[in-house]
Amino acid sequence: MRNLLIGAALAIGLATPGAALAQTGHVDVSYANFNEDFGVGDLDIDITRLAGQAAFDSDPIGFQVDASYANWDVSDDFDAWGLGAHVYRRGLRWLFGGYVGFDSIDDNDAWTAALETQYYMPRSTFSAVLSYSDMDDQSLTSTALDGRYRHFVTENLSLHGGLGIGEFEAGSTDFDFWQAELGGEFQFEALPVSVFASYRHAEYDVPLFDLETDTATIGVRYNWGGSLLDRDRSGPGMDRVLPVFERLIT
Image 1 (cartoon, rainbow, N blue to C red):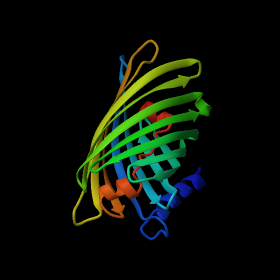
Image 2: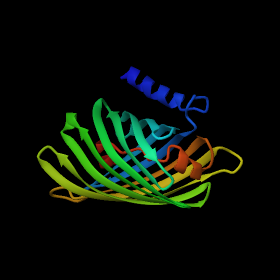
Image 3: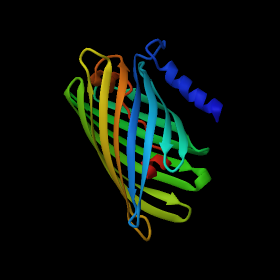
């Protein structure tokens, strides 16, 4: 486990301005408060995360690498980490690609695969992701379709809204879910630093009771390679694809 965490840290370390091919990227620190309401009670989790993304854009194929480490503070502390890679072809109007990721929490592992697409307008980006995630140790899988619209008020101020639907399989039980998210990011004019925030609400049609979750996130991000709009169009413009346990918990 220790060596895997070191590997995740090295992946973030390689995605720095000195890396040979990483034209654009970022490293961020964030805090999220997660609240789960399951009818007869609720659960609060505080999540502190260190994450990074870097893009290696070339013609005709581009690559994006994601790495993250998080501490989940519940009644006890849990460590979670993840590594992922996007491979894509990006044009003036469209992006088509795929994603494969590996995530682990408390020695429970999940593999995630996805198909991704984006459509670019002068100041807006539409994104869609179809994903499948499998946590074999817990007999838990998720299939999800997520859509997002991001608008750039200026080159360094973006607002976004997203909507997702999907299904979980837990052993012999299936249940549907939907989630919605609002958020934004602002990068300072004189510094390669941005601040971001988001709010996500999700509802799960669990047998015998309804489950609702709310997650509020704030963070600060160090960027290299240009403005937020530049990052969206020629850098790591794709979001990390959530593994099954984060989709259920956060």
